Image (tube, rainbow, N blue to C red; front, side, top):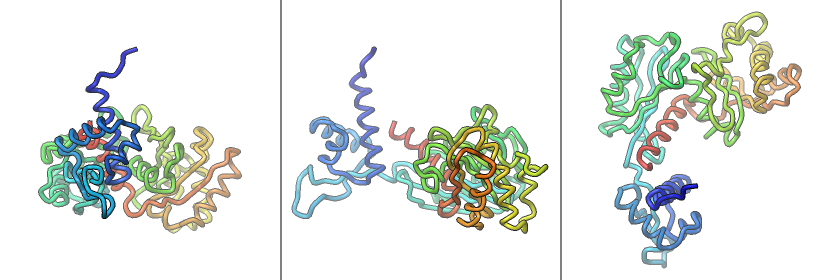
Length: 336
């Protein structure tokens, strides 16, 4: 068994400290020692190294009467990198830019058109307002291949072409990734919403723009071999696919609850997630009462107990999931 080299040990310690500063905010050197278990000299070297690299800075002092190095609070340099997420709809685009600690610093919209790549570059430029972008994550309808990041189906978005990602990369100079929009919404639900800290759940997305789903197991989205995992809208319910069964929007919620329960049942029977979250504009409009109705009906179909909750992510879950994913990519690149 090989032991870690000094350089590897330093890299591990640096990332541990950076993640703590990201999670808990500014910390003093004694606090970093307590949280990491590292020695005083090791923490001192670590702080000097991270300050020299431009990753952390002094943000203030702890305690009004204290002075000296041990009283200094160190925090991440938020401007060290910026990321962006874009929610691509058939009706238009919504983009957001965040700094390295996740604070939103700019947003922009763009209507649908024939030049999607040009619209994406323009939207990102307005939202970034001159800030260079480290990573960009695009959320769009359709099956996205997990290894090539290319669409494996036609998503119906106006102006989509095979070179969209390449043109956005060229136009922004950023690392650009495409993902299915519902998978991104599931990431936001796991980090910020009803499924927070839950390792397993399924997300059913009921939206005016369509019906989709995502499967989250062992703490991450499961995409399948070709990106088709979680497509709950294709499951048959009462002789029709769930996509068709929940149309038109005027279907009463009592009837809709049965259709949704039938659509969720195969996923619950196969993976037994213990939790189903209902999101999207139509799903959220039904609120907790609708989620309770679905839960009651699902209980009559499945012997596996399954909690059904409505999404609690504030705002645009797809866009937030895209920004969170872009932040993960940027932090790995910047922090090491």
